[in-house]
Image 1 (tube, rainbow over the protein chains, first blue to last red):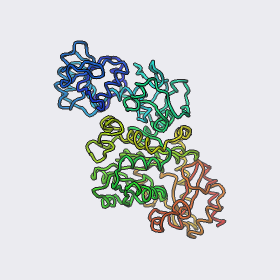
Image 2: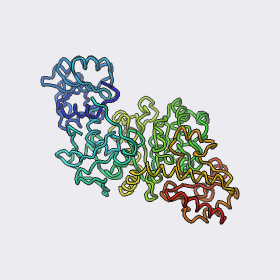
Image 3: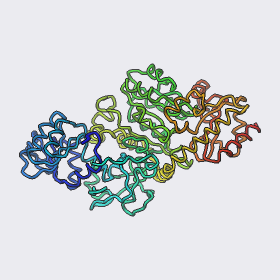
Image 4: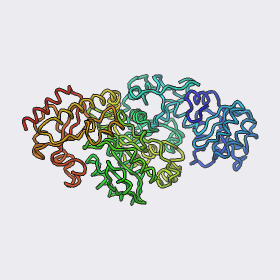
Length: 173
Length: 428
């Protein structure tokens, strides 16, 4: 796997196949990027479970916060790491232990040792990307802000139930 | 995993940013001639105003027709995001509004479009922004103009009106050493000839009015974020790297990563200063861009033929076109834009100021007007028009002395273009 350039198909597959995300480093501060990402992904129908030891037992966006991945009782598909790159290796070991399918490191987070560990255990890995930005990029929503989505399509975009200001990601481009 | 095919330039010029309309299936991009967009509910409205979700509120800030144009220009340049605005001058104003604080300086090449010299020298002074001039043919002159207050460097890739091709990589090295972004005005080259991002640019500006729109019918401008400058690491650009008080203290560079500059220009500078492009102009320019590769090559081919003919004419003192062998910038042309040296160039008349006036009066096919990059061939005598407000010294330094005539060679049959110049020179 080339972690410098993921194909759109690879990212799209992950974001359409899985629904439950554990967000490690989710912040209760409404101005933080993790808060933005959590709110957006929830609006797109993902179940997002916040993990943050400093906030354990409290709620972020109506969801109970867990101290660690190991405490989550339901099945987690994607572990989204909103922490410094150095913390990603230990979090990845926990992600493997709870049976997650994908380790996703946020924009600016990259840990090649963690990626190797996850891939050896059969997990998929995404590094240095934001799932909110990728969802918006591939669904066409981010294009409303002039962002170069680096994709071409002669197909009509797929609208969400709420109408033209909500697009959803189709499993195929 | 199969490798994804990277589309070519002509394919991007037609398709980038545009999908069939989600509401109607219209294949051409519709003109969304509306001021505003209904919210789904109060929560949706709040999320849009907080920048938490993507979407449209008001056409001063975003518009779906404009958005297609923005993504198309960004894709052609290879940048991360674009912003389309009312004019090329508006694009420059928004870029500097985002980068500079009162008291800051920037360095600009002195070989510039005359309007930019006015904007930088006079209007920017009212914001307490100060330009220091350098010589676009000499990257070391930018190094010499650096000061602790320098926040950016600005050049034109092909300088207007002089036919100079800037050593972008040479100037980019100075910007990188100084830790400031390099802004390249790529209007005369268009991304068909030069993609400044490949040579070290951090921000690209365009007058879309010229070759990108290409038909002389719509004013517009664009900003392209190359996604190459690390605003958080620099820390010298508080608009991007400090909490933003008008958006609940979010830090734009943190929230928007490598397209934060384009977002900042939109959600702060454009929101507050207001030079939005009209959706109709965005549509016309978008239509123009679809044929950019075809048009630009013909513009360049015609320009080379005209320059070659002029260089042999006995009333012509000199022709400054980098496409001509022996020209000072011929090597730069072969290095930076081998497909063509652009379609705008100057030449000098042996008869001086009076001969310049006579030529622009005697042409019948060329239009005497202050624009470039039209399908039609255009002619102007800068000393009596575009560069009139400048001092004699500024005119000379900008390559707009009394004997200078500027052409923007159009897409007519080249034999007809040459015949018109031939009769006008004979009549003078």
